[in-house]
Figure 1 (cartoon, rainbow, N blue to C red):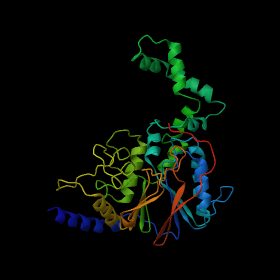
Figure 2 (cartoon, rainbow, N blue to C red):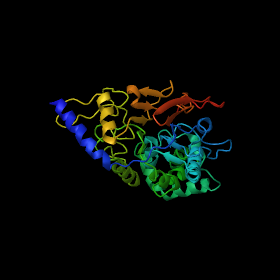
Figure 3 (cartoon, rainbow, N blue to C red):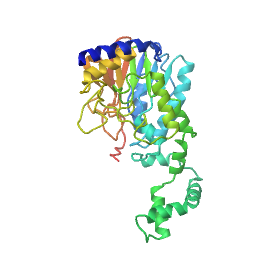
Figure 4 (tube, helix red, strand yellow):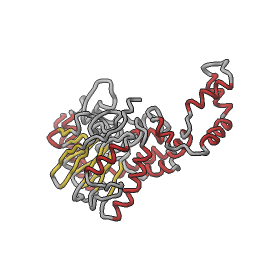
Length: 353
C-alpha cells in the first residue's frame, strides 16, 4: 500500500514540476547561511568568496549570491548587513550578477513583532536625536493602556514605577526599529520583496526546509503565501510563516526529535507513518526537478555539512559570534559543489542572549 502511494506521489509531483518557478543556472552561485548580526563575519565571507572588494562594492562579476536568511537577532549589526545587501542587490544587477536574499524565520519574527532575540545593538542602530522625544510621545499616547496592563499583575504599582519599567523595556531606537519592520516600513517592504524559496538551475534554496506538507506546492505559491502572511502580520500558529512544518522553520530534512514539531515529518494521506528523511528529501527533489537542496536554520559549529550523498547541503555554519562557529560559504559551479571557510575576524565576543 505504502509503496504504491509513494509511486503515485512521485508521478504527480513530476507532472507538476513544469509549472514551478525557476531561474536558469548561474555560472557561479555562492550561498551564505545565517549571519545573525555579525557584520564583520559577513564582510570577511563576502571578500573571501570574491563577491566584494575592500570597500564592500560588488566585485563578483556574473556570480549569484544567495543569502539564506536570518540576518537579524542575536548580534548587534544586522542593519549594517541589510544595508550592504540592499546596495549589492543594485550593484550586482548592473554588472551581470545577482543577489538573492531569502526570508528566514527571524525576519518573519521581526514582521510580527516577536523581539525575543533582538540584540540591544540592533535597537541602538535605529536611535537618532529625536528618539527620546518620539518614545515619550508613544508613552503618553498609550499611557492608560500601559498602566492597565502593568496593574493587571501588580494592582498597586505606582505610575512612576510603571513608566520606569516601560522605559527599560523600550530602549532608544526600539520604536523606530519596530516601525521599520512594519509591512509599510523600510525593512518590511524590503522583506516582502524577498522570496522564501528560490530555484536556481539544479538547486533549491530554502531557509528551513521543504516538508511533505508543502512539497506539492509550487514555489511561486509558497512565496505568495509567505508574503500574504507577513503583510498581514499573521502571528497565528497555522500561518505558513509560523508553521513548524513550513519552509522557514522545518528541520525535518536534518533531524527527527519526538516532541519537536519542527522536526516531526507530516504523515502523508493514506498512510500511517511519515516519510523517512531520505524519502522526504527525494520527494522534494522530484517535485522541484533539482539535484540538491540547500538549507540553513540549523547551526553546526563543524562548518558546512553535506548530507544524503550530496542531495542536501547545510550552510548554517554558526557564523555569528553569538554561536562561535565557522565563517563559511558554499560554492556551486556547474555540478561541482564546494564548501569553503574563511578566518574569523578579530573582535569582541558578544555571548548569547
